[in-house]
Image 1 (cartoon, rainbow, N blue to C red):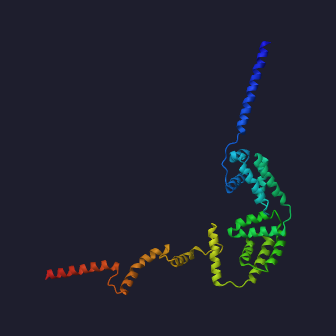
Image 2 (cartoon, rainbow, N blue to C red):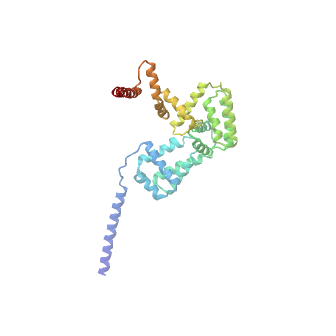
Image 3 (cartoon, one colour):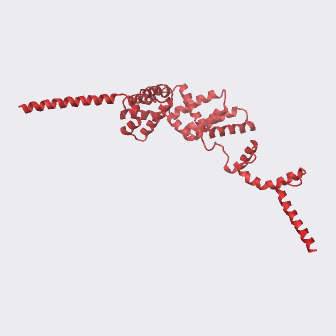
Length: 324
């Protein structure tokens, strides 16, 4: 009997000690860890890395490893709310792939970060069924044209995303209406970029873009040769500045040597890299001509040769005198 009582007393104190230890560990886990906040650009880069990981198939463990202590970062949570409200939801762009990944994050479960992400992603996906307004059509179309100089792949990806908001047929119908308004004040650069859509879109939209762009160019006065050269230089500068290897109408490498020579001379540089060796070979003859033309007896490189010849003649004269 006494043994049973003793065992109950021991069990009571063991349970009491266990509860005390668990409560202490729980409080320790809830203690906030100091986190250095990032800039808005830093948070965006951090979040996009997370979205890329989800696109590659990350599950809960690598996601939590990436988030680390920032899963409790209130600055990060505040930024994510602003990012969704002010950037994603205010733009008519679908951002379909990003929205899908944000919903996936909420399904995996990352506390408040996952909940906010899921809400934003769900709203973006739900908006795809809503018809675009005329202003939204134009905003998206101008965004597409702005991506044309960055290469076909970039513009094509954006065009494919745009089709989540409207079908190709709807885009064709809107583009016809938009083309009529452009006829009133045609713009050469805009017309050129619209024509470039024939390489990005396909079918009826491609044909419509080519027709509208051509009509706009026909309404504009002919381009002078100087304007054509200047436009080409500006386009080339834009492409190179954006890290693209070749502008659309870049000449072949075989033609570059002569152009490089003209550029170097025009900038006051003596020799382009390719012409340096050739000019060094010709310089001796040119130096001689210049010195003689200026009334100087000997160019620098001819002086040593003449001294050698003079020494030889003196030696011959001395040998002849001794022989006699």
